[in-house]
Length: 274
Length: 267
Image (tube, rainbow over all chains, first blue to last red):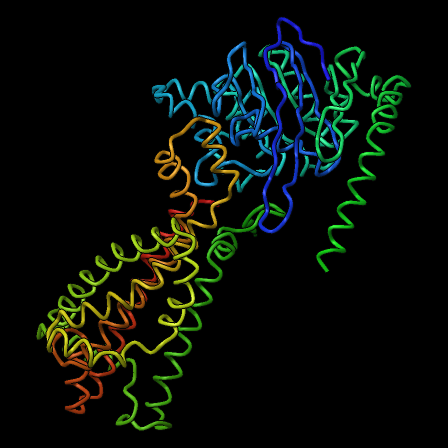
């Protein structure tokens, strides 16, 4: 549980969510979860598989309603997707029928921005995510990491205050993941954004975040919040430092029990099915 | 003595580049030309009687004859008009029903096996029913060809709309698009290639239906002309007309394939 702070840009207040499956007891995915994110902060939410991380992501993004509690953005309770929140999804989400430029310009097109301005802004955001020169390419011509950057640039084009990301690097290899992590940090600093990252990768959480919120296995609640006191930018030296390793170990100590419980429950569910 | 280089080492010549880009098309044309040559040679060398099989050169002459007296063009115009009407109706009916079956999951699941069964059944056998309903008119042909063409359109439209990934729809919601905007700006373009495959199949089935029913009813079009030429034992002309129908199918396939590639655009 967190203490309330005055300048929170995003607050998750007592959010609960259950899922109902026919002929089975309801599954309590989130239970009275609280989280506050300060302006300009990079917060990672980490937890074992099935702890309700993605449910929390969808509720904060306004894609699904919570059963109880509320999401507050800049002091205002949200009702559905909020224009201050930009979302980047775990799965491939680029539009295959649009070029990189047209993908990035999509939200601008919806906002009625004139074509010339759209092209200019799309070029700017393509450059920001390191995709200059690829504007006329289609997603199918790009690598997985590049496609995720297109999705990120498309979200950034909306210029949201809060960037909400659900394991955006999950499908990438470790090296690309680390490089893109650095890119995200640079972009956040350039745009002065607040970032909430949902992840199951401990190293990634420590590399990128100011604070790491550790979730328990089902029902998901924030078990503990850990401040990451490491200098930025967090290059190879920081990552190989004892302090970095200490944070990774500390988070794993908290997560291990939850992850083991998750594993036991999923194995039991699998055995029941058969 | 000077030796002209065709390119630096490792750089393929223009011919090789052209071959790599179009090798499947060139190979297909080569096989086609080879088969035609065998066909022509088998008749001119007396291996096969010319009363049984007309050589390609004879088919070309018969085709010119049919074109000159206007019979072929009249028949083609009739077939294309009927095909246009049937395809237009098949598109409207197919896309509308496909959309309704996508929106209503229960109805979609209920109709899926039924549509599959109709698609797999020999529809021309139902022709007498349509003759009773519409009489021996072009309406009967249009109606049956419409049914023939609309079934793959219905099935593919539903399948295409259902196959759009949930994440894409959520991207639309996160951009605060209305459901109508999500449908037109995300679902339809994402589903377009698979939908177009259905339209392409529908067009081919409608064409098959139109020519087959023209043949059966003896009303007009390529089918009727083919029936008449067969009846009069005009073998070269029959072959020429069959070749025209194959060329028409080939052209339709090429055209729809080209449009499909344009729609799919680098996916």
